[in-house]
Length: 166
Image 1: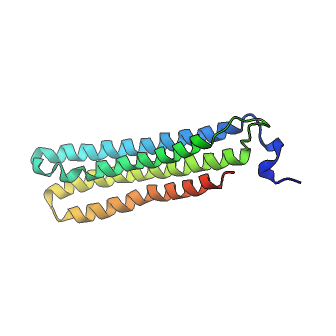
Image 2: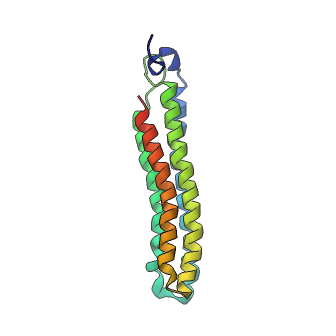
Image 3: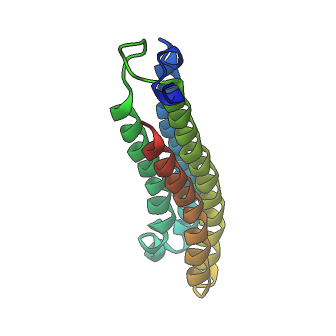
């Protein structure tokens, strides 16, 4: 008897749907997180720049960190898209692979959404606080790093899931 991942009955025509949904989820949710983080941090930078325009370039760090979240989703989405094959018995794309790819996309997507949200909140408050008390800058950077790591955890899990696909 063959293994479940090679069984033709588990390679239906709708199998790639799950992989495509994982690919879309990776991009959609991680981009939403990056967009929120960029917008929220940008609001803080704009408010801070009225009184302290000399700190604009120093305060751009949360925006850059939010943009990295979208790159995580792009990497996973590209990996998933390269592995998607047509369904059917001759296609060779099993439900197992589809579910792995969907889980991979959701993992990086939701982690990116959460990380972007955290970066936005910390970036907004941190930039405003740093304009009034410059010693807060190092603390803001540390909290931003911890928020960014949330997205990195999702990327790691997504890469492990993607490499499990046969």
